[in-house]
Amino acid sequence: MSATDALQNGHASPDPNGHASPDPNGHASPDPNGHASPDPNGHASPDPNGHASRDPAGDLEADALDAYSRIVVDVARRVAPSVANLRVMRRGRGGQVPAGAGSAVALTPDGFLLTSAHVVAGPGRVGRASFVDGRELKFAVVGVDRLSDLAVLRADGNNLIPATLGEAERLQVGQLVLAIGNPNGFEGSVTAGVVSALGRSLPARAGRTIRYIDNVIQTDAALNPGNSGGALVDSAARVVGINTAVAGIGLGLAVPINAATRQIVGALMRDGRVRRAYIGIAGGPRPLPPHARVRLGRSGGVEIVEVAAGSPAERGGLRAEDLIVELGGHAVERVDDVQRLMSYNAIGQQLEVKVLRGDRWLDLQLTPVELSE
Image (tube, rainbow, N blue to C red):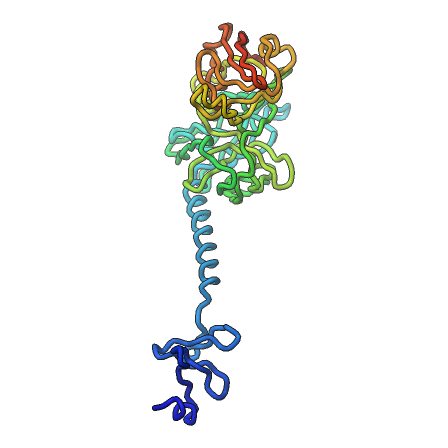
């Protein structure tokens, strides 16, 4: 049939370029392969059976949403059984009275839990830990370290599901994280967000002593009262932080899980307390300038943000904006490197400190003291 015959019979024929042309009623007809062609406005027309064709852009968006949802659902399913709802009690004149609430993360099958120190700090604190499987267990406080805002509890039970601990040093700004806890007593609540910032410092106080918790994680995952002590989790269901504070709307903070906090948790489980050396600085990671990279063969150091008055650091001559690159003969690239060196073994030991101050290299000395509450 010729094109003329096709038009006379009311059927669309291909144009000289092989595309289907509209029939006399203006409708797009199938191309020679039977596929619907777009109408003159560029919209997909129904196929010969009257069904609308799929929009690839819409399908991609739906698939992306489904992938995001699958991650959140999977992580929540895996981690929620390891997060407990805490009801904290204290001894009063008439017996035990409520003293607060929070969350905790199971560390071991035999009952060790990790939470925030401010949730359980105070004399005579006891309570109950409830889990999503319906179990409710009594707990006692094993050890509290106010200066890291971490505490270890021991629940009266076995066969807990321990969480997998991750490494906060591997986090990146923009990375997906979930906060799992029990805000306002609602068990197993999950909020999702991203890592908003890294390397924050958070002051912690014990009596007259102030220590800065370094490398604190900032997230926009919603945190509410009762979330403290709960888990901040990455997309692989690893606990990378312990939720500790709400600094504002959309601004939650979490104590990082790293080598320094692992040492603290281990000391609390073993001894019920933490002995640590103290030099009196708050700092954050900073890239080295090019000439320092060439000289040292590495890319980063720790910039001092604040020096505590009367501290060993002040007595040793350290100042804000100094860049620490070496401490006690060990290379310093991250805040974690400094914290790891502040074990009880460093108390009273003179340490050499190499710093970059502007364009000058300085070799200073300081002697850590025991950090006491």
